[in-house]
Amino acid sequence: MEQFVLDKDYIMVAGPTASGKSALAIDLANAFNGVVINADSMQIYADLKIVTACPDEAEQSQAPHRLYNTLDGAEACSVGRWLSLVQGEVAQARAQGKLPILCGGTALYLNAAQHGMSEIPAIPDELHQRVIEEHRTKGGAAMLAELSRFDGVIAERLTAGDSQRITRALEVYHHTGRPLSAWQNDAPSGFLDGKAFNFLIAPERAALYERIDQRFAAMWDKGAVEEVEALLARKLDPKLPIMKAVGVPQIADYLAGICDRQTAIEEAQKQSRRYAKRQFTFFRNNFITNYLIEETYSTRKNLEFFSKILFNG
Image (cartoon, rainbow, N blue to C red; front, side, top):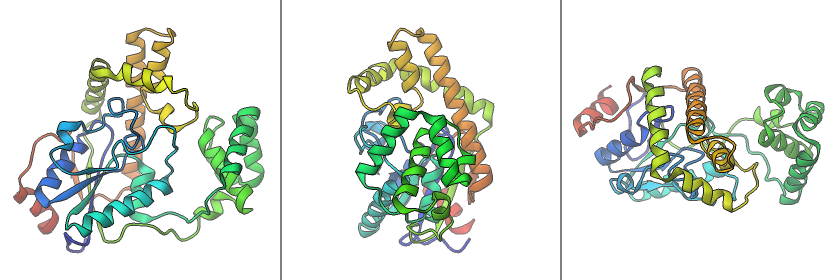
């Protein structure tokens, strides 16, 4: 990698859930006058601070944080919208002489920041709502079969349960007359200016899974149940991203009397471990790592340590 330049480049802190990304990002921000910018698709919502393990007030007070708890849960944040928000935050950070530090584990977000994405025209809301209603009426299997007629490439990647991706592919085709797979093959744009220096935290899996289990059990006692209860009281569309966040369906079942406390916790822990496994797969196959940390990050490092990594590695 070419020489890292503080006022032109940026850092990405990536890793599976519960690996210690927030702690590392805060340390880097303190070492290099940085701003921590969220790259987690669930932590962007205001409704789930506890369930999504969002940095708490004490953590956020240690360094500037942006795009955490920013959007209302009634909104669906696409990769494109997030990328637009990030571009604005990065520009503002640089105008203030601060180093942008993207922190998160959402593969699509990290990939878009570094490599850009295809510029698909905005979908009219009327069409968007029509496709959603059609999906609600016909069901996932029928909609997937319909998609296969227009875009077999995308359809082969999906299952009937991938409602958001199925409706997205269909609305793109109906609006543009062109398959989503064709748009995705276009030269990408929108990637961040400058070079990315990528820190990856990839702990030994057994240790990480134990940490995941402990963290969700602790969330339950910190107010996760009350948080989900308040979210459910809003009666939002169950297909919204926030309603599928790990922990929400499991706590919802507990609140509905479908399962007991221990069953809900164990199911949420299992789903968190599965998500971590998918993250490991992405990072192994699709993420260029400049510096690897092979344990959960919690120890604060000094400026000299990080300077050596960035400038003398």
